[in-house]
Structure formats: structure tokens, C-alpha cells
Image (cartoon, rainbow, N blue to C red):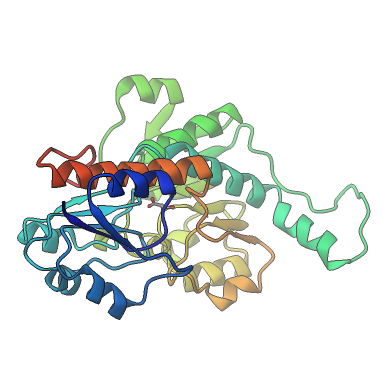
Length: 319
Ligand code: DGY
């Protein structure tokens, strides 16, 4: 029997699978585990099942000790994990691709609609008690039909977002490290372009790239400047892909028309400049937040941990 530390609350189905084979020490309080407590608990652990709110770095790996064999992240994004530090210590790192693709694409499309159709502004108007009535020019947004969606990062979630947008009559361009499979590109009618072109031709830009040094502030003042004044930016990837201060300035100045954000540069803090603006929709990192998806993510993370502990290849190692 091995010792598994779970860094936060996860669905019971995943805990039950872990408990059936191992001793499980899981943080059960609401809110994140304090760092000092986490460092204390991981000492002697064979596996750590981590949430994206916890940094898994060299300090934590050393606090765990040389018996640690696997870090199983309950997220597809793994910018909270120092993968190189794991590799140096022969610790397998895993993530949860696939199971949250549709849920996240649903939120991306929701934000596209909320931003282009000004739904947040409408909701705030009613809740504020301000008088309103139907008017020919009241809260007019822009239609998606015939418009161009630029997808930055054409992995599973980017493709699922493109598929949804195509059903709304949008044309798709994308920027990605690799060319789409020709059959998928044909199905989506998607054309691969460089980022500069994508920004200048798109009516909506949706971010789906991983976060790392190469994508830090990928969208800053210069890139926002190169977008159409009528364009909208949607981010369901990771906050620091966008320079939030530059975005707040661009939205205030009308450099672009609107934005929809599910993730934030200094999460859970939100740039105060954004909070003052009507033309930005803000949701608190809900991309994968359905009961079904979170259960599937936690179960996949548990399966990853269990596989490594029993000497098997895990279903989704980080490569
Ligand atoms: C992920 O899995 O990376 C998502 O951001 C979680 O919601």
C-alpha cells in the first residue's frame, strides 16, 4: 500500500478508486491547502494528486522525498508543475486531456456570444434597476454569421470551439505549432495562418494555447492594436497569455470592441481596470466546471496515479 496525498477536494468517485488500493491523505477543507501544510503532508508520499491551484516545484518534490513516483494533475493545463524538476527526480507527471474538451469549448462559445451580444451588459442593466425598454438601437451587438473566428492553439479544445463556431456560420482561421489533420481542416474549413494575419482578419480571437515562457503575454498592446476595432478577444486558456493591463487599456480606448475572460493573469485577482468596464465579460475559471467533467478529470487523474503506482504506463503522461 502506497501513500497518496490529494492537495484539495476532488469528487468521491476518484477518492474511492484511490482508497481501494492505497492510504489517502486528502485536504478536505474548502479553499486551497496552505503551502506549509502541503509541504508537511507530502513528506513520504508516493503519489501527489494535485489541483492547478498548487505549485508543484522543486521545493515540493524535495519535501516529498525520493520515493515520490507520480504527480497527477487534475487539469489539462500543467503550468503549475515544474515538469523538468519532476523528470530530474524520475517523477512521472500526468494531466487530464480530452475529458474537459467539450466543457471548455462550451464556455469559449458562451463567452463569444456573451461578448458579441452584450449579454453581461444586459443582465447588469436589469439587475441595477436602471429603467430600460425595447429600443431599435438599444444594446446592439454584432452577429457571428459570416464572421471570422481566429483560434490561437488548435488542439482538442481549439478544434471543439471551431466546430461550435462553424455551426453558428463562422469562418475559421487558426494559428498552431502544427498543421491540422487534412480531414479535420476540411471538415472545419479551417485555414492555418501566422498570428499577425489571424489578429488582423478575425472578428473574434479565441485563445486555446498552453501557457509557458513562449506564450507569456502573447497578446499585448501591440497585438491588440493590430486587431479590428470591432473585434472581441476570448480567453479560456491561461490568464498570463494576455497582458491584462494592456487589455484593460485597449478595451477602455475602444482599440477592440469587447472581451470575454474565464482566466486571469493573477488569478484569482482581476485587474481593477477590467472591473470598471462594461465591454468585458468576466467569469471565474469555469471552463471545466460541470459535475460530469470534474468527475471525469478526477477519475482520470486517479487512474494516472494508480497506473504509475502499480508499475504501468499511465493513460495520460505529460510528454
Ligand atoms: C485545465 O484543466 O487546465 C482547466 O483550466 C481546469 O478548469
